[in-house]
Structure formats: structure tokens, C-alpha cells
Length: 279
Image (cartoon, rainbow, N blue to C red; front, top):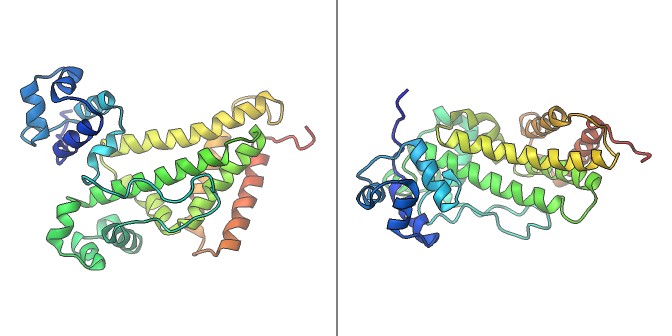
């Protein structure tokens, strides 16, 4: 099967290369191409394959999806104190992404059009294409925002406590995210199948990291005799899936209801991994 070129990434390659402090010659040598070819890639004269984009990402030590974000985007990192993982202040998103969440949630990815999203953001269609060349770029940006927020919360929830508490906190944080960021989480839960390569591979790796955080913590607790011994990977995967499904069966929850659901899920998760309460 012939790989299709990945478009609209040349400028991002140049920007991220400069941010990494890598010269054009250094990047060319790192991926085994000539300086002329590397220059053509950055100027959009040579298409990028998925494999080539992965090579560049590895050389610059950045996620593949960074090349598919709008240049200079300020929507890639959550704001606020990441250590306060139970507090969810509104994400600072540009009007286009705010509108995209609304339209994707209401009409789905295929039903959404750039014209509708532009109208919701009170911007011209030409203006929206200047920043986001396609619906795929919008979906990728939303995925990156969600996963950056979630990763910070999971790290903070498991920091500085014993393994059992860390595990329960991380499940609570994962559930809270899907309650408090319900609209965004619902879009992700229903539209992730729309991701194209290399975005799909990046998402799978990101999800594996989330499951890996939880599984590593569960194994530490099992080594201490607090959880059952044996393979905990299936239970961990089931717990993550359970948490991700919350926005598909809940309405917009108030803060009290959200905290209650999250605590209940943390308790259920402990049962699923065989927590020994008398240990």
C-alpha cells in the first residue's frame, strides 16, 4: 500500500525545528536526506509521508501531532495550577475551537462544516481556513488539548501519595475530567474514529500512556500486597473505558454530582483490582 503524503506540515516542521534549536543541516542529517530536500519539505514543495513525519518528530523529540497544529497556536496547554487536579477552570480556547466543540457535539464530525463552525465563531470562512486548514486539524487540536489537560491531572493526582491512594485519585481524576469537560470529552468519545493517520497512531499512543500510568500504579500496589496479584491489564483497560463512557450517559452535571460520580467510580475501580481493605 502506497503511503499518502501528509499536507500542510512544512511550516510546522520549520517552526518546531527552530524551537528545538536544530539547524536545517542537522535535521536533514538526522533523517538521512539532503539539505535541499529538507528545505523543500519545509517550504511545502515536497510532501511528507507518515513515516517521514515520524522520523522528523523523533529527531526533534516532539509528538507527531505537533506538526498538525496551527502555527503559534496557544491552545495546546491547559491553564491553572495542575496540582489542583480536582478544580476545573474553563479552558482558554479560541472562538473557532469553541464553535467546533459545539458543532461537532450537535451534528457530528461528518455533519459539521467549516461554514457552520466559522459562523459560530463569528469569523469568515476564509479566516477559519487561515488558521485551521481542515476539520481534521480542528479535531487534532481538540484531542491534543484534552490529553494535555488529562495527563497533567493524572500526574498530579498520583504524586506524593501511596500506590493505593494514587490509583484511586487517578481514577477519580479521569472520571472528573469526563464529567467537568463533558462537551469536549463527548466529542472525543464519539468522533475519535474520524482521525486519520498519523493522528490516529498518535492518539493510540496517548491512550496507551494513560492506561500505562494507571497500570503501573496498580502493579506497584499489587507488589505491596494491596491489590490482587496477576495480570491487571484487562481490569485497567476496563476502568479507563468505564471512565471515558461517562459523558455518553450523563447530562451536564453540576459540581456536586460530578464529584459524587467520580468518587463512586474510584471505589468501583478499587473493587475491580481486588483491593484488600484490611491490608
